[in-house]
Structure formats: structure tokens, C-alpha cells
Length: 223
Length: 223
DNA sequence: TAAGGTTTGCGACTATAGGGCGAAAACCCC
DNA sequence: GGGGTTTTCGCCCTATAGTCGCAAACCTTA
Image 1 (tube, chains in turn yellow, brown, purple, red):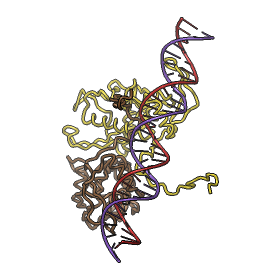
Image 2 (cartoon, protein in one colour; image 1 turned 90 degrees about the vertical axis):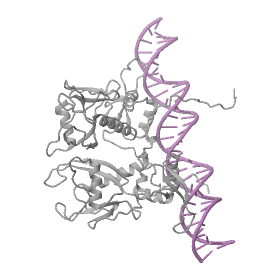
Image 3 (cartoon, rainbow over the protein chains, first blue to last red; image 1 turned 180 degrees about the vertical axis):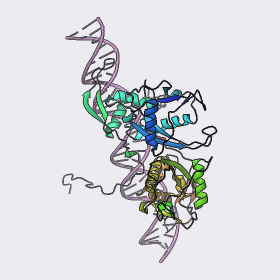
Image 4 (cartoon, rainbow over the protein chains, first blue to last red; image 1 turned 60 degrees about the horizontal axis):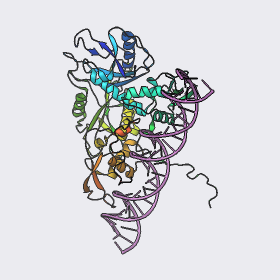
């Protein structure tokens, strides 16, 4: 996430198959390694990205023809890097806006799109935003992050109200030092926790409320 | 799903490791096979279940110690069988209520619980119900199915209103022939489609409504 | 120091989806 | 026809969130 756009880190493939096209970074699992450990290792070793704030398994893809003349399964992960960190990446890799992908190798385009959908959904009902935003931020900054990820405008008023009511954000008490182009400085917020939390409220068809203790709190001796 | 309870089909293991305990049905992937094809094959061949109305990949588990003295990955799937079908299963397999699981082999307990959570979540914002319910049903029957899967009481009134408004259910026009213990016969409904559909309304932070054509539809020349 | 421009904060209003409840309707059995 | 049971339906209430507009706070420039 940079330059106001949601971006993916891609490798430029030098060898067949798909020499010349772009692909998601990845590699083979080593013995005794967890999938997640492997992902983190590949990211660190191969593209020197260590600041992955969130990592989630997407899907294991098994179509027999996904790799030409080979039978190969791949497990895709979604990894998020905050908008304020800018890891130096090797020459053969580059960030690409998700909205304007070059031709991708294998089934990687489907994977990227699936990842974007997953991210968009989770932004709605979890606090994953913590993985995209800087440690502290104004609501406007956060709005830009959400807008980039969601792909449409977001109302700062609404964003603030929703995330505050859910207890996802908390004010730091500070105010941003200097506005970018003048204007009232914004209050700073942070995500209350940097671990994934799900907003329960989306469980429709909720369990009935039974013990409503004190159904009618003493209302002043009406009888 | 039978007897008003959410149930899982389990194998009784005859050999080590975990001889004597129960396990999820499964097996090895064959060359050139898709994971989903493999699952369907295993279910058909080994436990003779062919009526899987819904199949969804859960997660690929890779902990190195999940299988003793071996390194083995497994991809778990969630499969749903409608409450009215009762496949005959071999002697070494049986349905178990998810709420009262026997000790399970490997990491299968975690998988079952993950599957239940996934199901519960998807019942809220998709039409997966079609995979659990009979082709036609009264709201009460559907309520029982939902209650079993969700693990808590469900209001028939509410269920009907919600699913009708979402356009998930449609009335067949018929009425159930004979009530079980007398009482008013219920109207019959069916799921409008038996393919997965997601209720969009849960995307909070929706895109702003721009072109509100006809903001104030001709209200009778009030100046 | 005052005016103008810009951004942020916040409250008021509205819309809508869902939950709870109770009365009426439709059936069975006696 | 009366009593019991289940279903249906309407009404009311709440919670969540989308929209709007004005006031507040800051900067720059005259």
C-alpha cells in the first residue's frame, strides 16, 4: 500500500516457464517447516521483506494444469505490509497496483484477486486495518488507507464513528504536529490491539437474549 | 445433521497411529487429481457418501508434528449433507454430534471445530442453508436446521423475515400436507438457488451513493 | 491583526435491518 | 363446538451506519 494505491509485490521471472512475466514471490517448502514459517522465510530471504504485519492462508490450489508439464500444489497466503514502511526490494521485484496488474504467471492473477477480496471483506468486520495503517494516524490518513484497499471513497466521519464504537480505535490524546497544507490538525489514533479481532455483531440470527437482568430498572415507585 | 443435532461423519481407526480413536474420513491425493475431486472420490469410495451438497476448502495444516514420525500436510474441507438424506455408511464409520466429540486422531478436533465455526459464520451472510435443508420445507423445519447448526434457538419469525427480505427463500405456494402433532399447516418454501450467494449488505463502509437519480421523486407540485 | 482558505470534529437527521411479542388464523382431536 | 397446537403476520423497538452541514482550529497572506 503506497502512493494511495493498494499494491502487490511481484517478481520478474527470468526463466521458463513464464519467463518474462511477473509472479508472486514464493518458493518450496522445506522439511519440517510450517507453511507460515516458509512464507516468512521466503519473504525475508528472497525479497528482504520482514515487516509483514498480518499473514493469513488463502487457499491451496491444486488444478493439475496450473503449472505446465508438472504436478504442483501451491498454498497461497495474504500478507499485509503497513503503508508507512517501504522495504527495499531487489532489482527483479517491484510493487504493482492491484488495479493494474501486468500479465501474471501461473494462476497468480486469481490469487491476487482472491487476496484483495479477502482483504476487503475483512476490513469490514475485523480490525485488520492495524496491519495497513501506521502505528499512529489521523482519521484522514486512515480514511485514505481504507479507501485505497476498498477501492472506493470512504467517509471519514463514518469510519471514525464505526471504528470507535466497536472499540477498535482509541485516541492517543495527541494531535498531529503540522497539517500537510494548513488546516486544523487532526487528533491521533491507534488501533487498540494489533492482533486480529472479529466484530461479532455480524452474526445475524443471534442467540435470543434470555436473562435480561433488571428488565425494568427501578423507575420510581410506579405502584 | 440429523436428530436435531449437527453431526460429523467419523471413521474408527483400526491401525496405528491413533488406533482405536476416531478420525475424519480422508485419504491421499492421486496424481493429476484436484483436491476437491479427491475429496469427492474418497467420500464416495470409502464411506459411500455422494450427496454432498456443498464443499468448501477450510485450511491446509502443516504443523510438523501433526502426524507422529512423519511429515505430512493435510488440506481440510467442509462438506455438508442435507438433513433429510441419510446415507448408509460402512460399519467402521458413524455420525457423531459435534457438541460431544469423542477423542479424535491427529489435529482433527481442531478441524471439526474450525468447520463448525465456518458453517456458523456462513449461515449468517450466505445462503448455504440450501445445503442443509431439504428441497422444500416449512419455516419451522428450517428453524430447526439453523438452530442445530448455530447451536442456539432461532426465532422462526425472524428467520423467515430475514431470508425472505434477502431474497434467499421463495414460497412454493404449497402447504405442508399434515402437521406433525396437529396445528396449522405451514407454508412450504425453497431456497431460490442452490449455488452459494453472499449477502452483500455485510460490507460495512459501503461505497458512497453518488448518482441518486430523482432525489425527490415528483411529489405533486409542492412548488 | 484580520480575512480567507483549508482541514478536522461533531452533532442532527435519516434509513434500514433485525429482534421481540402478541394476537389472529388454521388445523387437529375429542 | 371447545380446547390444544402450530403457524402467520403485524406492530413496535433498537442498533448500526450513511449523509449533511456547520463550527472549530490551524495556516497563510494582506
